[in-house]
Amino acid sequence: MNVPWMSKHTISESASRLIKNYQDMAGYQVGPPIPVEDIIERYLEIGISIEDLEERLGKEDVLGATYVNSRMICINEKLLDDKAEGRLIFTCAHEAGHWVLHRRFVSVAGRSEGQSDYIICRAKNAREPIEWQADYFAACLLMPEKDVKDTFFEVFGEKSIVLENIKSSIGGTSIYVDPCAENWHFLASMVCEAGGSPMFPSTPWPSDYRSSPCLSTKQEYNSAGVYPA
View 1 (tube, rainbow, N blue to C red):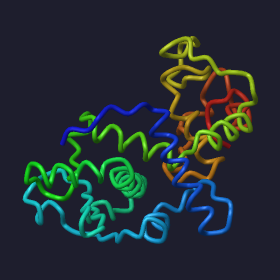
View 2 (tube, rainbow, N blue to C red):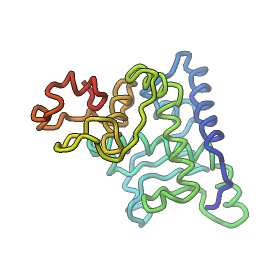
View 3 (cartoon, rainbow, N blue to C red):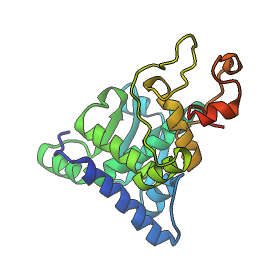
């Protein structure tokens, strides 16, 4: 399905507005972890079902589907796997994004072109504009910009962390000590964990952390801004 271009700002504002509207209805301040399922069911008034979508639709790698006319979001039952909790939550937020951003285009396409009244989300289509927009909406919904920035400053201070190199500038060790592209996921994990986001599980300590010639304790690792305490 073809959809018009949307700026990141427009998508972010749509996600922020959804959170605000839900807050007004619920009567309390909402912060991470964002209650995505409650927002979908109570505020958007859309049902959520867990199904074997690959069997139902006859297609592989289906993660979710949004049915506009029946006001239903369906999630592939495979995402109930304990290891897929982050993917399950993200898919719910992604489908909410389709509802907020794209349902009007589904209705128009259905009337003018005889197309189905649903949007199917498959992993292989992630780069299509409609899927990218829903992905970005989900990210903005689950990790509101203000909350992320506030938590980042709380964890690292207000001084910017500059990733000037791909790998650590300290050689002779498999552990990347200084901030670099190789350990960005540890930095992100610290922010997510401190901010209450369920997107990333706690990052395990490397088994060889005590053998590092540079850092020998968890406290020292933490002060270097690499691993969560």
